[in-house]
Image (cartoon, helix red, strand yellow):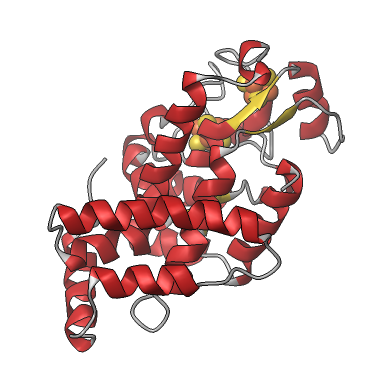
Amino acid sequence: MKPISSRAARRLSKKVARNATLTIGEIAARVESARIKDLSATVQARAKRILLSYLQTAQSHEMPLTDVLGEMASGQAAWRLGHAVRDEIMKNPPDVVGKAACAESCAFCCILKGGEGGLITAFEATQLHKALASQQGKPDGRDWHPDACASLDPETRTCRAYDARPMICRSFISTDAEACKKNAEGGKERGAGLLGNHLDYLVIHALCRAALKGVTMVHSYSLAAVTAGAVSGAEAGTTLATSRHKPSALAIACRDGAIAAGS
Ligand code: SF4
Ligand code: SF4
C-alpha cells in the first residue's frame, strides 16, 4: 500500500510549517488527553495504547513528522494498526473463524443496506478508486442486486478490488450464509459480525481526528459512494468529495461498533 499522494503531502507540509512547534511527542500527548464521546474508557484506553505505540515506533525510527501526520490524517495509520490487531487475533482465532461459512462467490455481505456500505478512510477510498480504474462503465454488482457494492463482479460475485478492499470487508465474518442473505434484505438474523480489530481501527481513526484538531482534517467516507463513483469514471478528487461523511459519522460508527462488540 502506497503512502499519501505528493499533493496531500505538500498540503500537509504547509500545515506543519504553520504549527512549527509540533512534535511527535506533542501529538502523543494530544492522543493521551483525547476523549471520544459515548465510548467506554476501556475501549478508548486500548486504542490509545495501540496508537501511542505506533507513535513511539515512529519517533524511535525518526520518521518525519509530515509522514506521521499524513498517515494519521489519511487513515493509513488506523488501517495498518487494525491489520496488526487482526494478525494477532488470527494467531489464536475465536470460534467464529473456524466455523465461518464465508466462501468465494458468497456475496450477500456485499449488498450494502441503506446505500451507505459502512465507513472507510481516505487512504482506503483512494486505494479502492485506483483499483477500480479499469472497471469504468462495465457491469457491476448493482446488475446483480440493486444495493450491491459497485466493486462486485455481477457474474462471479467476487470483489474486483480484492487487494484494496477496506477494513470493514476484511473484518466481516459469518457462520451462516443464509442469515447473511436474510439480513441483506432487512432481516436481523444472528451469526454475522465484525472481528474485534474493526472497533480498534475505528477508535484509532477517531483518536487521530481528535489529536490532529487544529492541525489538519481527518475525514471518513461511504464505501458504497466511493465504489460507485470510481466505476462511474469520476476523478478521485470528485469521488472523495461527494462520498465524504458528515463529521458525526465516525463517532456514531465507534459507538455502534462498541455496542455490537458488547464493550
Ligand atoms: S459474511 Fe456472509 S455473505 Fe459474506 S462471505 Fe461470509 S457467509 Fe457469505
Ligand atoms: S469492496 Fe469488495 S468485498 Fe467490499 S463490499 Fe465491495 S465488493 Fe464486497
